[in-house]
Length: 251
Ligand code: G
Ligand code: G
Ligand code: MN
Ligand code: NA
Image 1 (cartoon, protein in one colour):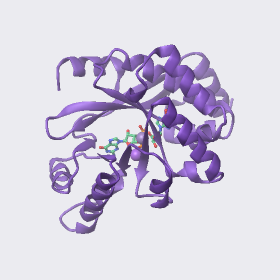
Image 2 (cartoon, protein in one colour):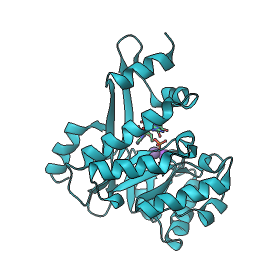
Image 3 (cartoon, helix red, strand yellow):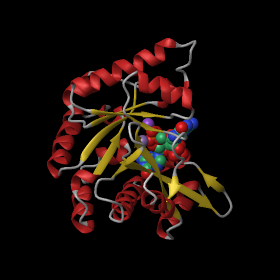
């Protein structure tokens, strides 16, 4: 039994789960959004990271079904939250390149009834690899549906500023590697964070800095202009029941 076979069965048997990690406004510690992250606990394999199984799914058409499941589940779950709180869903570049993807998003919006601007799709720069005309068309269609678009893991991979010129992003998510390395010794990472925040502001986009784990890191990113962060310092990804508790407790 290959991992792909097991993953197919897991999707059918509803053995996959979505965890949610808060994105927090530093100023008042309020949760503005939660990022959905897939979790898979297999009876024999144990916990398998999405960093392992997403690439397996991407090698087959399973990524489309898997992605659609996550979109629908995340939107259904977010309906229980205050309307001011958004939900972010990661979209694989393979899923994004499927011509049927915008229709899937439209269906999920219609079927769940969630306000489109409460759904944020997280895309990485890899969506631009390949047919860029097709990618731009998909971006336009998605914006037309009213959903928000975030550029994930910014600053790593094939970062090119031209992507920001050609695609209608609402938010940039600064890759956590900049936070990991922003210490007293390494002043460059902090300056890069400041520059990305400045760029993002100039383009009327929001910025979330990812991977903040410690108070000294929070101080540095705050001093460099960040207003929203996501990281273990506030919360680890948690099951939906915990999210409801946390949002109800008001912090
Ligand atoms: O939460 P964690 O660190 O385990 O996630 C590892 C990687 O898997 C991250 O890059 C994350 O974006 C990706 N990932 C998690 N959930 C999903 C999902 O639902 N869809 C896609 N495409 N990627 C996901
Ligand atoms: O979608 P993306 O590739 O950005 O996935 C974010 C990943 O980062 C998730 O797998 C999540 O579990 C992980 N993560 C979130 N906050 C932290 C953090 O503070 N530290 C570390 N090491 N990982 C984090
Ligand atoms: Mn993400
Ligand atoms: Na990221």
